[in-house]
Length: 268
Image (tube, rainbow, N blue to C red):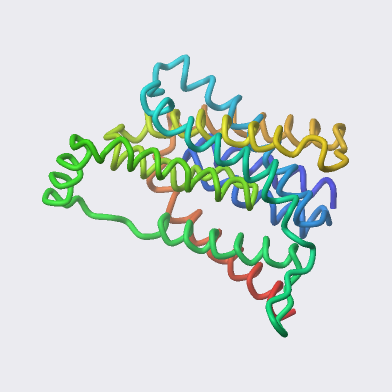
């Protein structure tokens, strides 16, 4: 099962390099269902693996000049603050068994159910191809130039940080469209900037966990190395393979994974 997990993380790295997000969503299911880790420790490991992998991928985009420092400043500062608070102060205080009247739910199950819902949301955003809408483009253009534009981007950064902190996913599938719509970056620059933000979010979130859990560093570094090789391959292939055509296919795959996780946690 360990070898199968390594192959899966190689593919996850390639997906991150190709489309700038979405691949990290598969990290936790691989750790939980293939490598048999508990959900909470899997989210911590996922943050480290995704963070190191995204950092490797981001360097290739930095060298190409396809990263927006302004977007990182506006977006990442809010998200890394919220993700650190989630991992350091909030996650350790959530009880192992949550009781509401006669209803009880294990913390591990809650994490995986929310994770499944996040995967389903991501798959929908990747499957649906949006046709250009000039009227909406004009509206978003006007909005981003108003005083509300920057605070709204910061608010979105906080939301991404909370999601990243809770489920251990980088949030690139949300960050890329946010950067394209609200910060007006082109697709390639949005991917490079997204990888920088994902790397910052994930590493800061992981640091927030230090001292709360016992970690297997050899396991972490091995998986991260394999995932890093994958993202380098993905970054090379991104110049030859149209990323937009890959997103719908990957979206359908993540849809199947999301349904599997939801059914397994709630009904099996």
